[in-house]
Image 1 (cartoon, rainbow, N blue to C red):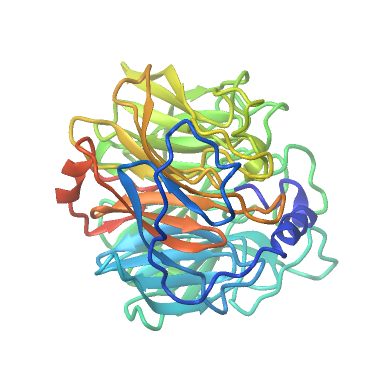
Image 2: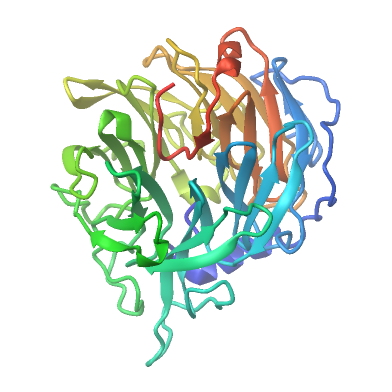
Length: 473
């Protein structure tokens, strides 16, 4: 989601005020309410707020509402990461650790208050990383947000925060790394030496001169690479700031820099979604990524938001977050090629565009809906994804045929009662037999799909999962 300097802090306040009158969820785990399955062609417009609708092959197993102190109007849930029997859920107010050893009965292990936008989370061994994409008064969890112009003598901070999670019940803040324009999202790339971790920092710079910002000067056509000594994370630092845009991003780009990068270290590849561009990278040397190709889709894509390789790294799915996540783009007025996924085959090392996919259920004009974060469902020989669509819910779709992708299952709720509320599924990922969806207002959903196409994935077990760092299955 684009909240931060793309429209400024005032835009964030406006978005959050729209959420203010939404009723808070209850504070205990909830079982899935019974409701008749909806067809894939139905609309959510007639559903009551919170009513669950699913395809026949999908059911809601459990829901964990946001808990204090991360349940305020501005405390939206964000991204997800997994390790063993634990799920880590980012939140604009901090993060929560859940025990998911029994997916039908998740348990809260700890909740950490550490406010910032947007607190996207990843985990590596005993370390947890949070992305901070707004100027703060300092790097600590007690810091205060600052405006774009902060006054003379003020040295604001934004970037990456590091926590020790060796005790999941009591995570501890360890250190931080300041990065130019902050960190909207980040991607871990393990080094050749397991004691060294690299983090690719994606951060937006404004499309025009930004003279009021002390932390983000335009142009910002680069990414930043942080080196983390795993045994001494306090020594983490920025070691490279490569410009990965040989053709430039152009004045017609929504913003400069990248929104998200997905790395596939086993294949020495990364795919960067960079607002106006998609970039295919060779990361065989993690500190010196090499550009293999830079592509554009001016006709259909506004914000190149995220990327996903298929398991064989012969395809890349790029998503377009049309409108920045706050608009109703899943309506009859918006073409199916906009606010959607584009599927690219990799042919002789180059990206070639094939089909587009957009979840097929028309949403109410009050519902923010556009493609957002998703992951592969690990079925060998097939290319299947689960993906979040904000108030459009969660879609499971098959792109084995790159030219003719199709939805095979879905989960969604009825519109939020407050018109214009920013709500719905931020991230939906498959992990060890279940789909976990981070709903901005309604908390963590655990969803199960039972279908001959996806059932083989239930036998695939992962030790950990950070979606921006793909692993083969």
